[in-house]
Length: 130
Image (cartoon, rainbow, N blue to C red; front, side, top):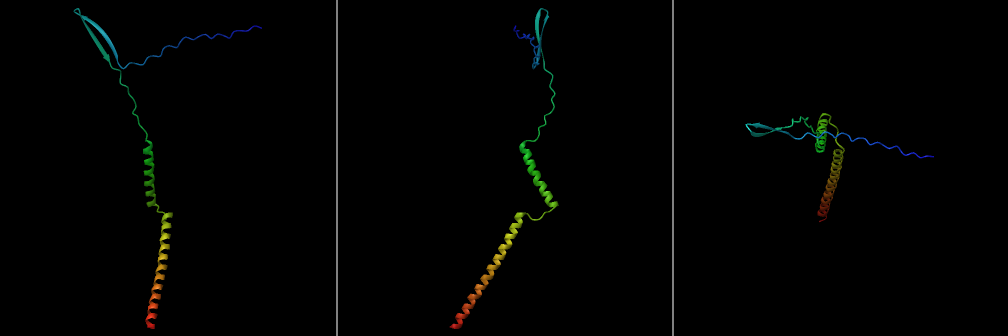
């Protein structure tokens, strides 16, 4: 029983280096000899302008909330004027309370009138005795 060695993996060569990003500007130098005078010229070439699409931002969270609130208020105002509905529950409750208060005040007014008549009758009875 002979053992076998695991197969050896051959190493792959390293991938080629990624091209480097273009620099912001390129410069070249030339040397020109004129009448034995050395003139160094440096030419700077600016990179081509990048054309980008305009960025259009969507509405922010605050704009969405305010927009929804304003839209709801305006929508309710329009729908209530076009299709008027009956009084709200609160309006109905206040109307009922007002009616009940008016009945109570009428009842108290009748009691006061009756007490005044009783006092008037007592005065008449007291004057008749004297």
